[in-house]
Length: 337
Image 1 (cartoon, rainbow, N blue to C red):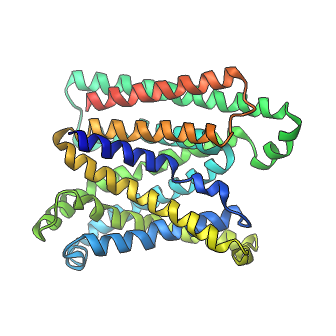
Image 2 (spheres, rainbow, N blue to C red):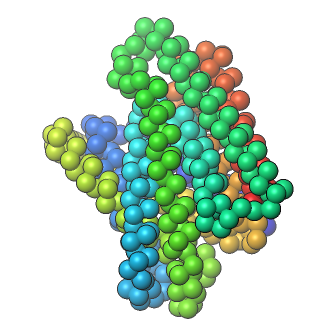
Image 3 (cartoon, one colour):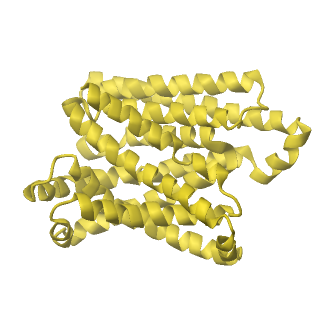
């Protein structure tokens, strides 16, 4: 149990810091950084991890029903759009708000998806889950309000005027994070649809239980990566940003972005292993620990990188209150599940 808890915390921390290196790339435009990231995290890393870790890899996926490929592919396509919007939101409103609002929305909607797939739970569980969802929603609202106040605070500081103008509207960034979170719940549907077949197929080839998560992520990441390839390919050409890859800092940038890609993918895989170690509590307690660690880490990352240095005490209090609501809401949802 202790090992599972520590692994879940580690996975959450990894997801919470994966985008941090983006702040230290040089000579790259937004399109350069995130196109390279998505290429690595959606194609290169999943393919290598799947081939290495999954016994019977080719047999499992060559025999997978075409209907299942279609269902998982369409849901993962929407998830890909959502994750792409997540990266855009981080660029607009920073790590702390971008992460917490996006993940809060994912939890808010994702907690409702099982009702559509498995039906309503017993009354006591349903009440707990709905209460937890409302608390998470309150956290999203509080953090959104904190972001809007922060934007006004930064506008009052002379040396922040140009930076705030470059980042764009805080309200726009918050909206992008919320819509991205809504679309990203396609991951939950794809996982729910594909897991039964992939679990049985994985087990039949002698794989450990946790390897099922790696198998499920393969079609999800590949399908989700298609939309990102098209999006960034278009914008790299439209903004003539291809030439920015020739920067002298490319080697350093590549290593930073590779770190992002590995951490982004490994966080999911590590959580799957943590859930396996936690046994029956893996999908409830483990999920709460994982998301809580992620949100808290992202908030502290944003504070450390001085995203909130010009924010007023009121904005910071709302931010902390929003985080507290999310943590409490996640725990309540886990108890209900």
